[in-house]
Image (cartoon, rainbow, N blue to C red; front, side, top):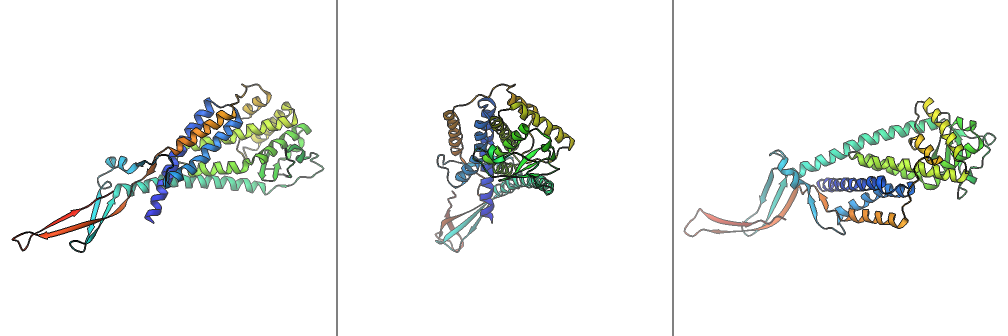
Length: 362
């Protein structure tokens, strides 16, 4: 059990360090260097996914940097004397026999507990909140029913690039529309009051979410953000992922309907409905309606498109930087070493003996 807790603490500490560096890199690059939502989307996904793998490699064996960072050695001088004590126990059976030396480092043991508690307690709290939010959302979805084809005279498959099959359901507790399953879109009762072009834009937006597998990516981002709840930068990256997913699907929807003004009218109607329902739970959270409308109508600054080669270089730079980090560990709480003990009786004495022991601790 001690070995398991040691590897768990070392991996969580390494994961936290890798995720922190990746989040800082992604937030800085996404803010100042990349303005295209599609390029930023790849950056957010890499910042969430890469640290998970590179931290595991770091704990097992770093492929680039073989050095190790012993955190216990840094915190030991700042700990109380009772917590930084090192105990050495020697067990031997006689002169010339192999001797076992047990070295117990209290600082490493307590540091391991602190790391596990610091990361697991916020993770449990964040996970419980996420589960409650999801439960409320799915409880609201129990009210949905299949949409009446006579009320919905739009072929949703025609709005998909691959003519993907999709089920359309209606719920009075949904403020707008949401992709709720890999092949299902749930719309609100307000949807039927929209014009035909507005309806096409809303469905095209949700079809884009399904085609891009945003449900799975956002669920993954939420899971990582909950597991690393002690680091708020990871949650910021997850929020940026949600926001840019909305921007990208807005662009896809307008590109397929060729009417940005109608799409903005639909956003406005759903925004009023959202306020009237006092903020019900949505599948993707919410992004600023004004900012989305400005992008659709082209009122804001145009997104600067980063060349694909430059984007790939940035991702490669992030990956190589994470792999070059040293291995982080909390120190070995218990070490056993074998020694050789020799003894001889002093000349002219029947009661005194000289014992020589060589102990090498690595």
